[in-house]
Image (cartoon, rainbow, N blue to C red; front, top):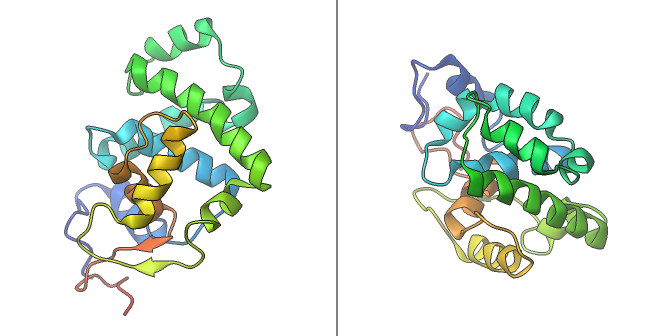
Length: 178
């Protein structure tokens, strides 16, 4: 079975992610939050690295419970910085807490983060071999204006791919849709 060229076939976790999750439309706000946190940690790294630590992130970040993360204090930040099983980057950890608070505000303002995204893109699009587009540029610009960090256009494009609003399966991949 052919898969996208980026999928490391030696990593069963990555193959499963490619086959069952990446590019599959999922607009559940809890999932959208989890993926935004994970994608923001990807900055400068591969998503495979983040995916390999996903279970550790879930445990360290209270199963990505938005309300709990919004209350993280200095003690929790220190706990995260000492957790060898996640990415221990102070800027990214601080950004994840800040971004959680902003995500919550957006969720309240639009009655769901999914509704916020729908103001930019209503239906999934197919797009291959790109790292940004006008949509990711606009969302990134707005999120930064609202105060989010580690949400550049490339990260937002990857995010939109992960949640299925952009389907980028390669033409030789068994999941490719015309």
